[in-house]
Length: 135
Image (cartoon, rainbow, N blue to C red; front, top):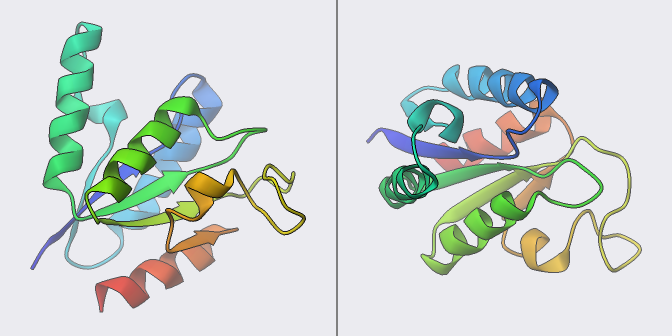
């Protein structure tokens, strides 16, 4: 079975797009996966972008969520919640070393963190977590 992975994360600067592209390339090296990345999915009106991204999430069985920043991007947080509400699996990646949650050991907001099966702190850990899920 080919897994479809939705790559969620902020896309509002060249740096965010470059990082998303790097994560996408790492994911594409995994066997038997197809990556759907909002940066490549839709353009047009806000309604068209929303509909295309919603369709892509509905077609995917896994999500990788980029959680870097002082706070998780609000669109990414919405997508994580939507995906989680469908009972689908989410792996986060947060390379940002700033604490961004409520408790001492929190990585991000507890609602986002608890929606993820794991929050990797580097690309190698992300790939390791995904390989475990895909086997």
